[in-house]
Image (cartoon, helix red, strand yellow):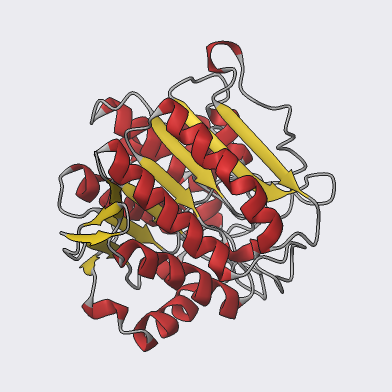
Length: 332
């Protein structure tokens, strides 16, 4: 233990798990689609250049079971995806998410990867975890949407409660697109503490996430949506980020999930925010510090969107490095 001003710092290197293998990278769409299978390779080139592989724990992905998928999704949705996965043609939604042979299995692999990380954190095998091809936040309980076939976040939240008995789960989303599949999937659920900073939906898919959307019924006030105008950068992010931290601290979640989509970085071909990866690093550091103050330390990072390969490589690896840094703890 070392002292830093008024803070105590545990200098023991944290155990950080990264789920990262070739089967996980198969989730992606062909024929020049923005969400192509080369995204994992872009992350891994930077991951290797920084020497991060020697500093983290590695885990293989797996396919989620049908029972696990059904904890969030409807049987009808699974049936439709399975049918299109065999045919290998058409779309799984209105035109953004094409079917291909094996898409069911590839999407189930993403969910299984996220669950592998969740169970490692809950078992105490790691303090934080990161899954690069994950965070598919647009898929609804009964439909695919926006490049997202199954919602690994929704499945993880359901299983954290059913299998691990957690009552409050914090979800933070800094992807440029609003995490509508998570928001509406749990809009009336007071146990999901939701905070989302995104590009204003009036100019960007999916067109949701107004600041007035704060949850329904008993969940009113547990949801925080912060739309930013197009062209907003780090300064605008830093101005609103304390609201996210205060919102989370108010409800004291027992597990934190960060969807750190890199499409909020300047230069993404599909979006209009102008953050740098410094904002992603800050979000990761601050959530680690909050998790440590809350006493559990559990933070799961999920890659999310990002269609500029250099951006996602920088943003996601900055998150991993932030997870590896010792977290300051308040004294007293």
